[in-house]
Amino acid sequence: MEKLLLHAARRGKKHHHTLLTLLLKSGANPNAADARGATALHKASHAGHHAIVVLLLAHGAIASLTVHKTQQTPLHLAVAGRLEPALLG
Image (cartoon, rainbow, N blue to C red):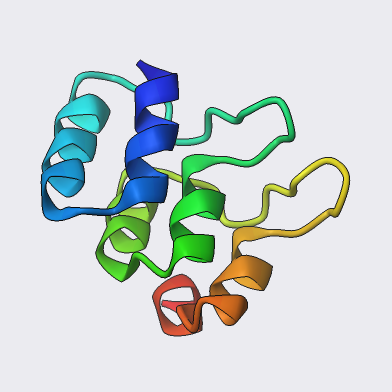
């Protein structure tokens, strides 16, 4: 379930938002990470998917988790994707 969550967060299409909502309501961990330590919030932030960032935060995604090698938080990636308002509140 978490692999699908990570994939859908990165892709960001409207149907992915619906899928993410269903996965999160079904108990998917919003802080699950891939082998590099990137969470769904990292992926959505990097891709510039504002609505998905907001959805993940509303379901408990932690904005301070870092990618292992680069130590980047979702906020670092949001700045690159111009999404900082979503992560700042």
